[in-house]
Length: 554
Image (cartoon, rainbow, N blue to C red; front, top):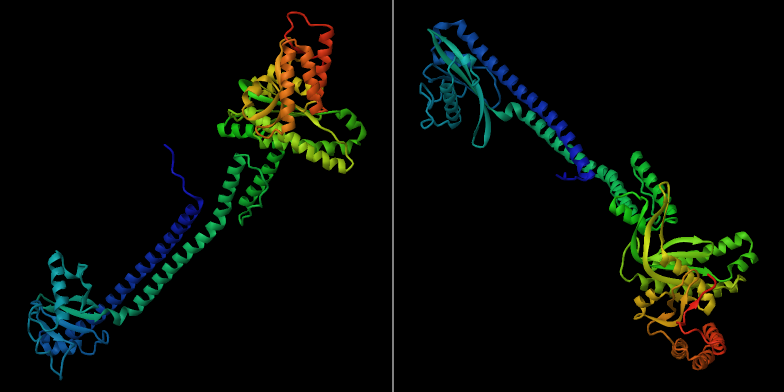
C-alpha cells in the first residue's frame, strides 16, 4: 500500500505548532491548577475565619446559643467582603441570625425564624444558594465535615457567587450551619483578570509561533521544493544552467551546491553520449548494459571534401577551433531534426534516426537534416571565406535498413552505436558522391520512404565496393515543391537519358546526357554517363549486362 506523502512545510508547521501547543497547554494547566488552589485557599481561610469567630463567641457563653440576638452579635464585626452576607442556620435550616439587617433589627422580617424555601423567600440569592446546598446534602452519606460540598459557586442574575456552608456545633447534639455568600468578583476578579490575560498571552503566543513557524518553514521548505524541481529537470536531462538555490540551512545549501555540481558534470557527460539514450535509461530505471536489438533505422555519414589538404594549411590549434565550430553547427542541426549523433571520426560525422527514441518517419527526418546541413554549411562557408579560412563542402550518404543498435564494447566501456550492412552502405554512399559530383546521395530504401516529400534524381544503379549486388541510388535535391525550373528540366532530361542507357540505347542516351549537361554545366554525373556511353558504343556490354556500375573505390 502506497503511503500518503506530506510536504515538509506542513510537517514543520505541524511539528512546531504541536510543540508550542503542548508547552502552552502545560503552562495553562499549571496556571489553572494554581488558580483553583488559590480559590480553595481563599475560601478555606474565609470559612475558618468566620467559623472560628462564631465558635469563640459561642464557647464564651453556651447558655445563649439559641438566642438570635446572641448569634447576631457573634457574627457582628466579621467582614467577609464589601457585598458578602453571613447567615447562621439551626438544625431545622431556620435562619437564626444574619449580617444583613435594617434599623438595628436582629433579622430582617422576611427571614426571622423561617425555614428557607425558594418559592417563598424574597431573597432569591440566598434561596438559590440553599437549594443547591440542600441537593448536595442529600447526595452525601457522611458528615458535613468530610464532604466535598462545603463550598460551591453558582449564578444569580448573571453574576457569579461563592457559597460556603460550614457545620456549627450548637450543643445538645445539635448541629447548625454558618452560611457565607460572597460575590465572586469581590475576591477573585483580579485572579480572573490575570487568568484572562494569561490565556490571551498564551493564545497570542501560539498564533505568533504558528506565524513564525510558517515563515520559518517557508524559508526551509521553498529551497527544498526548488531543489526537488531541479532534480526532476536533471532526471529529464534538462541540464541548462540555473541560478543557485540558496538556503539559511547549511545542509540544504550544501545539497544545492551538490546538485549544481551534478548538473554541470552531467552537461559534460551529455557531450559524450546521446541525451535521448540517457533519458530512456532514467525513465525505464535501468542501468546501461551490453547488448543490441534489431531496428529499422536511417543512418547518416558526412565527410569534408579534401579535408587532408585543408588540415595541412592550418596550424593545429586553428584547425581544432575551426573543426569544432563546424562539428558543433552540424551536430545541432542533426539533433534539431531528432537525430542521434553517434560519433566523430576526424572530420566525419556519423548519426542515425529512430533510436533510442523510435518514430516512424526517421528517413524523412534524416533527409530534412541533410538538406539543412548543406544549407547551413553554405552560409558558414561564406563567413569563413571572408575571414580568410578555407572554403569547403561536405558529402552526405543516407541509407535506411534493418540495423543492430545498442551498447557495444565491454562492461566498463560502452558506446551506444549501430552496426550492420545498412550502416556500411551509408558510409559507401557518402564516398560515392565523388563519382557523380553530388553532395547528398540516398539509398534505395531511403528514397522509397521519402519520395513523396522530397525532390530527388535517379542517379545510377551501383554495387558499392565490397558488394556484388547493385542498388538504385538517388540524389537528394530539395523538399517537395522547392525544385526550380532549371533543375526540373535537367532532372527530366537526365532520367530519360538514364532510362535509354539502361535499355542499351547508348547513342540516344549520350545525346540526352549531353543535353542535360548544357542545362546544368557542372553536372559531373552527366559527364560520367557520356563517357560510359562512348565506351559501350565502341565496346558493347555482354548480354547479361544489367546497367549496374561496380564501384572501384570507397
